[in-house]
Length: 523
Image 1: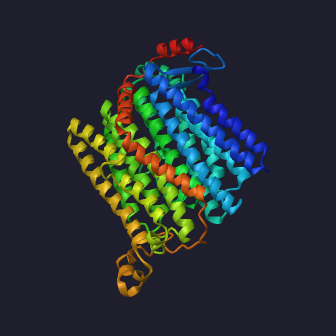
Image 2: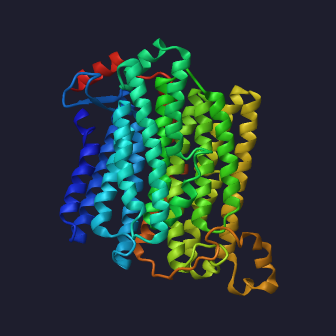
Image 3: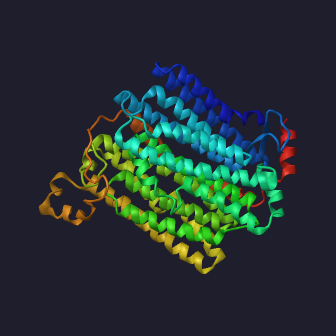
């Protein structure tokens, strides 16, 4: 079974090489990409089943080097679940992009560049999730970031190049901080293996641990778009092509959150900064959602809600109980799926209406009723209405916070409820104006424009683009993702039970000896 673990990284890289070789043959590239991600999803499902049933993680030392000298790939329930969810999301977005490429040619997603970059992005994401040491985690980040630099500037428009430069600069700063932290940790402890770091970190003075801790947190907070380090996200994501924006919003920030979970629960479990994280979570939720309420463009609204909902995950991490960590993992899975689905639905809105401005789009309920449903279901899910997975995840977080019972926990619960209500308000206001508002209602005399005139100066409020036909495969892939969001609710019991077991195991991490035994047993 251990032999399957390296395939999660090598298969996408091999697929990227094949796709690059066949750069002028669109169908071959599409076939290679679909097969690669499908096989990756199947492998992740098998690994998840194995580690869950056996109760033991899988570890592989690449090249046969003894631990801790070699590169270790580590798959437990958390890593396997996130790889499985990521591969499903990547496959759905790929099908969406295939439909867009077939309809528009290479204008939005140049196929010869897109498919190799997309598979390299997948390899980076998977590698980050299964990395057993800090340097390999850094390598995973760099792989996905290099691919994201290409994807975010596809089409080479002025706005994409400008925002792409900002994204690249911010990412490079984060990477430099991460690399500096790794160098400092190696200099202090002589290793970057996470299991060995967990054993050795207590040897350092508390002040040194705190400095190393904050260096890593700062680097990961930039990648996860935690306030006040989230300034780059709302301007960077909306300008990219719809498929790229969807996969970035769903996955890239969660890799940063995942890195925070791993380091907080394993390396720095005896040197916590939970009070600081609680304050940061509060600010992230409130500032992010207030930004969303002030927007008039759908992709910017979703980008700000993305920032605000990262606050829920930081909140759950900072509570630092088995229940809160399980709820955090569940909410991560929910948010990956729902946020991606909403961006895909908005991509369909842009094609159908020729705009994503809620001041410009109107009458879609009558013109495209299916599109109205595809937006509405994930929107109310993200807003946290029962019985959807968003409500389940938030309730679990609030319940874990209430069990702790400190004043700041209750303040975070109130902030979480307010954020949820404002999320629902922002998304339903957009739905009301874009889908319910009819042509005859959108005039000066009706008062509709007057009631939302405060949004006239919001970024991209008046942007109008070309209306385009929506290929069936784009609708089908979005519908499939909506079905997955519903499945998160229908199968909430088994999924939450799995996540709860992860919460308990995260607070009891694998030691170096156990890791060595697992590698030796796998070999």
